[in-house]
Image (tube, rainbow, N blue to C red; front, side):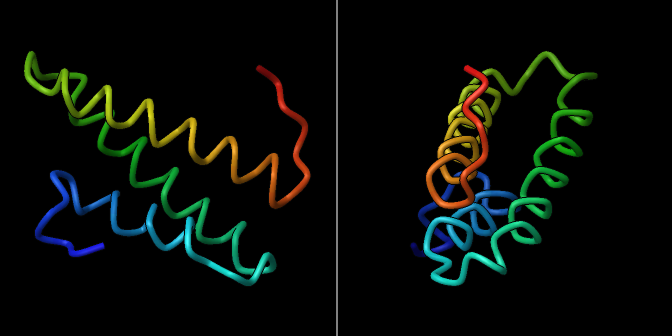
Length: 79
């Protein structure tokens, strides 16, 4: 996806990399990178009244990561 069309490219670009990664051995590191970026961003948003839309996008991203872990890495689904 074109980086210019993403609202939050700092963490959405690495998320896209996870989604399209064909090699399951590379997924854990890519997932960890995205999770770290997301949680760092959430820490920044914590002290802000803004960011409602981004928080919703982050929740969606975390659900995507959960599905990738479950479907491609055989993680249990805790939901």
